[in-house]
Length: 277
Image 1: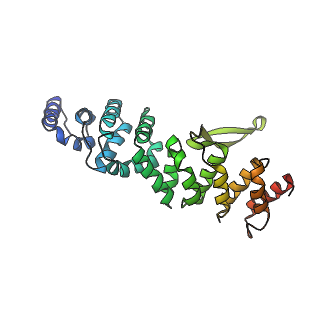
Image 2: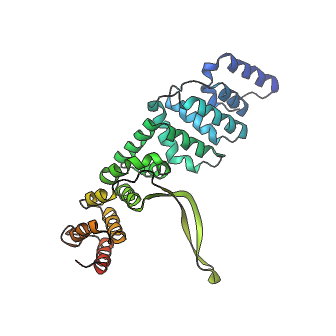
Image 3: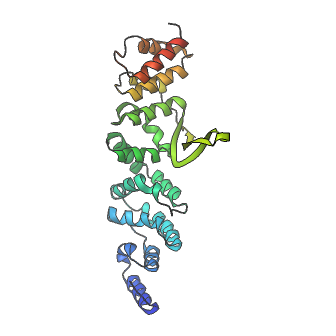
């Protein structure tokens, strides 16, 4: 790391002579060198590590570097193939919300991801197949994108994780997508006594293209997960006055599910009290 003005000028001149090495300087210890490297970066990124290095500069401690990183990311993102972008984007979608110095870069990053439909489709497919906690974190963040709406039916039917299947079904039935924005708020139970609870702050958006929620509910009747069954019952309770739901209600309250969890059974009893078969 240069420790004097002359040494810094010499090093910056060296990097300027070899702009092809600018991606390496993204990890330099001196912010002035990182900023200079970002100004030169205007080409296809050749490795996921370089993609991650560029995106991570949006969380750099130096505001000048963060500002330059926003511009460099816009220049390079569209020039880089989706298979190179994918590993780094997948990681950032998991942990990016914990970065505290985005300065608006998180929204800009999500917009770039949304602009690449092929990239987004690959992410949605991995969310469907992955059984780890990584997929859950990514799912929460891609909920913000209208591109997710086209995947809701497939996620509701075939996602590996039950809570993702349940969420996709709920989104379709209610016609809106909700997600936790990573923040908490205080909800008072009794302000005079100082009693309150900590609640997640939820955000929502309307679904752009409404999927066939009836077909999704019908297919979900075959799901063994209590989480999905509860969403089916919640949907039927909400839509019990629609004529086409009567057959589904009859199936659910009949012998469709021989064994159910307590939470499911209580919903079934509530539904039974609200309808006449």
